[in-house]
Image (cartoon, rainbow, N blue to C red; front, side, top):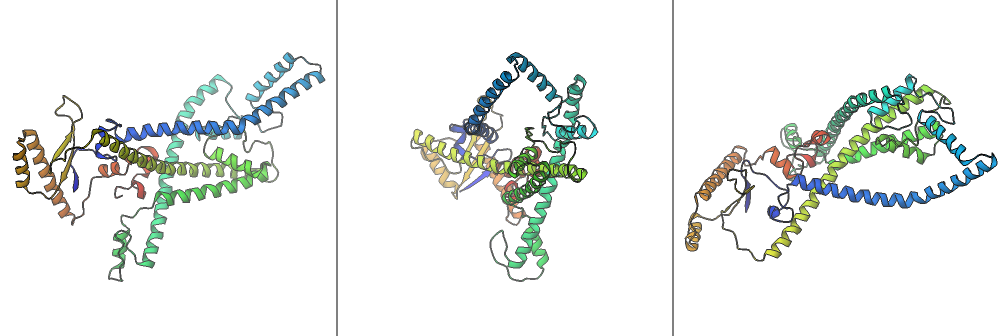
Length: 438
């Protein structure tokens, strides 16, 4: 039995009876979006529970120690609680302006301002430096609007180029492996040495694309190497522990930017201070680009998982519906099953599903006469459309030497990657899992 899609119809990755099941009239994109929202909410709840269990005891101990120190200080220096609280609030205001107990580098000289705008446009936002004037806050709104948009464009262009380079390298390695083994990857048949090996290899590798898992592994290794090298530098120069340095690298490279640990903030460093600040800038730039690319590749794997869950839920839903409805009558062969998009709209766009068997016309007519059923004009026109689609399909396959070439939009919907926007649009048709030939 073959399932043929007429022009203008839509393809669903879930079973055909999905529109009559618990999903209702929801399409794949909306179902995927709803499932992702639910899973993110569950992920947030689990994360909140874990962090609350890990950090809340430490918070309570810190509050108890602070209350004890506060009481001892007021008694030792004969101060009232109100006077000490007023002094501490004044220090908090000075802390917002960049004043600390330890001597730090100036916040708003040219180098400090350059560090600040770098954290703004990269969306890291450590928070150790913030504008205090009204004019500075207003300028930050417009400056950040253009700067963040430009930086996101830069990250997307970097992602496009790193995916292209990785695809070229992996394709070259795959070609070398094919030349050593003499294996055709598509149909699994082994080839012997025939004339024209270059043409044969070029045809074999023409449609090959790297898997998203190989790209994810390479980007993960690159991110780990950059983080380890940067952590070694921060441990030696800043005096942080190596684990704390790794924590800072992830917070900075992923643009989370808590601000509890910030690099390159001292007035002077031992050794070559200019080399350290240049290395800090380069490590943050490479780390942010690498982690951004890794996040977008991981999003493809998450989207594949959502597609798999939707298919599983659709199958279970269809089984439940079939059990509730009971035994259904077997549909007629060569039956055309249009699904209307709404009542009272005869000209609305319809999804026509065609199931064909090798049944001759006399059998169908005999069954129709025995049942006393009369064909309507609508069924007649739909049947003619089916025959025309079959003829067009056969002519197309004959022109392509028997190899059907479905449209790009249909194939994108089949594998769950319908073009996409932003980073997903860049990676569309560049990896095996997002390819129209998948």
